Every structure is written in structure tokens, then in C-alpha cells.
Amino acid sequence: MGDISALRGVWNIVPTPFLPDGALDFASIPGLVRFVRATGVDGLTILGVLGEAGRLADAERSAVLEAVLASAAGAIPVCVGVSHAATDRSIAFAREAQAAGAHSVMLAPPALARPSDAALRRHYLAVADAVDLPIVVQDHPASSGVPMSVEFLLALAAEAPSCRVVKLEEEPTPPKAGRLVGGSPDLVVLGGLGGEMLLEELGRGTHGTMTGFGFPEVLVAVVRRWSAGDRAGAAAIFDRFATLIRFENQAILNLPIRKLVYQHRGAIAHPTVRAPGVPADRGTVADLDDVLRRTGLDRHLEPGSVLPELLVD
Image (cartoon, rainbow, N blue to C red; front, side, top):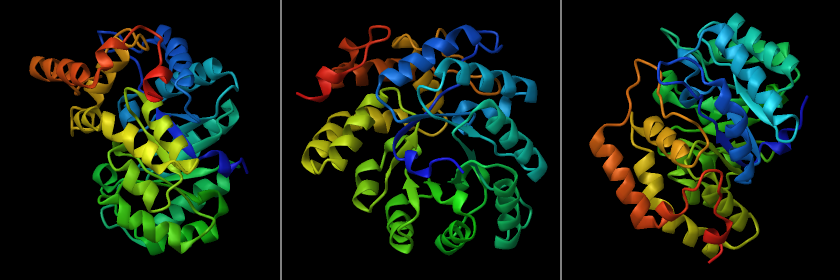
């Protein structure tokens, strides 16, 4: 099995770039990977919910997987989303990710007409038995429709060592994070949801975050200062940019906003969200410009630039 300890710190949920007509924008992928790496994140996660994996054909998934891993070239670990309603398809996706050189896979529970712990256990154990990779258990009932209890997650981790990483996104996240961390010293718990509750999650003992955000280096700075014992410094950085974190994490608009920011920063050529998703409306674009101005980030949108000087003052 791969190195579970690497699944700590900040892992960026990488958006899938599209052309204005909705076709995959392969030309943007190398620059996107270079940009995200330059922000100092510990890993990349692709083909998740906000990677629009559900809007890709299997051949498109394979092409994105190959393009990202080729661009990463082993310089940074890549976690690959393999969620599907059918266990055999999740297994096929996970095997493909392993063969391509992925570090780990992310697996949400399948949509079930009548969810049960027994059915979830069978699903996760089947995928765990099929590959020799760490499995990030995505606990996001808002997208999966399936809640998973603390007791289930701890029992799964005890039975399947590869399932000892939880991407916790069941709100409110801090109380559940505390129960998970307190329930097993071997469990790795990562936050998500745009980093909105990052400070409180870290305070409950989480090990970082796996999420999307237009300025990943902000989250990197928060987590690194917290891990170094500088909680006041971590809080100061978080509070300075909390307005943008809150704004970007709006339901439905979070991906269009994030893609706009990535386009502004030169990471992707177009902010296209594949149909039936829709782009941000004019008012939201204006609001984003205002938030960037108020936080001073409008002065740091040069293509390819990152913000180390902004994070230490």
C-alpha cells in the first residue's frame, strides 16, 4: 500500500479545464499543474465532484488522468476520484488510476435506495481489495446522499488499513472531526468544503485539508503555521482572507467562481463549466472583483504568480 502519511497538509482539488464549447482543454493542463504545484500544496486531487467527474465520459476521464499524471511527472502526488454508483466501475477506475501511477484514490459512498452500513462496507472493502493504494473516504452526504457515522468510519479504518483517510465534509465538521480523531490515533482526517472551517477543524485535531480554492497558497500558509505551533499566525492569515474563502464557497457558484479566479491567475485559459453547469452571472463577477479588491488580491493576479510575500507580512 502507498504512503498514507503523505495525505496530510493541503491537497488541492484541481478543476477540469474546458474550452468555451465544452470540450476538454488539454492545452491548459500542463500549466494548471505547474501553477498548483507552485502554490506549495502537498498533493493534487483530480476527478472529484468539483473536478466535474460526473460530466465526463470514461474515455475523457482516462485522458484527463493521463494528462495530469504526465504533467505532474512524479514531482507531486496525485489522488484520483474513483466514485461511481456501481462497485465494479469504482474498481475499474481505481485499477486504472493505480496503473497510471496515482498516489491514492478518493471514493465516496455509492448512491443507494436504502443505505446500510453492510452495503457500504462491501463497497469499500471490494475497492480496497482490488488495489494497493490508500483510499480517501469522502464523507460528503450533500453530494452522495449517504451519511456515514463516526462508528462506521472507525470500524472501516480498523478493518481495512487502506481506508484510514477520511475527507470529512459532513456539516458541522468540527464536532465530527473531534470524534474521529479521538476515536483512532491511526486515522488521518482532512477537511474540505473550500476551507471554510479550516481553523476550527485544525483545532479539533485534523491533519489538513483536501479542497479547492482559488489561492491555495493561503491554505498552505495557514496549515504550515498551525503545524509549526504558530496558531496566532495561522489565524491571522485565515482571517485576512476569510472573506474570499466564504465568498468562493457559495453553493452552486463555488466552481464557476473558482474557475474565474484560476483564469485570472493564468492557470487555465477559460472559466467554462460544462453543461448543465452555468457560468457566474454578471453580478457575481462584479462581487468577485470587489472581494479581490477589498482583500488586496487584485494586485496579485499576474499569470503564474503566487503570494509568498503577501503571506508573511
